[in-house]
Length: 159
Image (cartoon, rainbow, N blue to C red; front, side, top):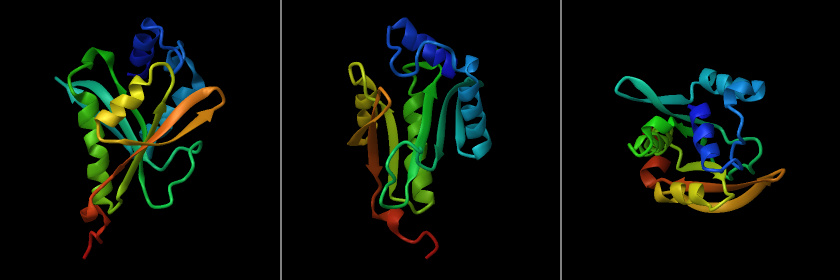
């Protein structure tokens, strides 16, 4: 899925987000994805029995400032480009607030590439996230976004 996304971005001349080399050719990226798969936070969406997209939920990424309260962090979201436009990303993102609510957590955060035309930031905004602080990792421009859940998520789930 990650290789498919890189290929699609590269074909559009949008190499700022993930570069132009397949994820599978980079041992560091392969190790990161393997770690996500082992973490218990990876969820795979299927369409007609085929893997169509992936979301990874867990603690915040080490390169972003910590939140002042408990949170669930969207560590990764990727859609196989063959399934573009079928609502796979929206369906996967809907898992984040649902899982946060189950855990009694009222904050979901995500970060994304904020370069080029800002289209990815606008996508997350269209999914209910609000921009918070921008950041950079080296030359890579990023944006943190958050979604706050209602009071029900803040109440003690046990009692």
